[in-house]
Image (cartoon, rainbow, N blue to C red; front, side):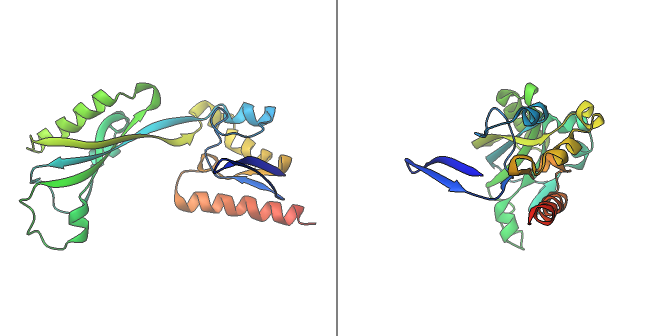
Length: 208
């Protein structure tokens, strides 16, 4: 397996026994020599948009801990994917045990999620302001926003047609293994277990 590329403006080539692809296997974005069977499978991947924001706000009367998960939003698919705020983290609060600073203007980190085709930065920003307004906070300054492509996965029809299992059939072909989280439910434990399973299989069956 030969890997070629460019690093610090210099071309390089390395030889490996196997290539383990842990990055999202997105055909249009990852520079691999894709085979047709790989294209057929990974072209079906979809993703969501996760928007992270850093805001500066007035004192928050609802702030009782450094991290708040808005469970009503998380448990409702419509609001969760509707760009509503579902995580608020106060970094200062995470480092302090007391509440002497509870009346100070502070910076917070928020998270919102949307289906990729529905994402609107303008809509997300307004929902962020509405979120704080409902908490009695009017003076909100958005300092930073970054949308990320998040949670590459197969849709329901691809799950029914066993696309995650098709990835397992690919693993080892062309001396390549795909161990990205799209092959398993996206938790740290499941993803690591999946990668370990694939690695153990390849080294066991191919070591000779």
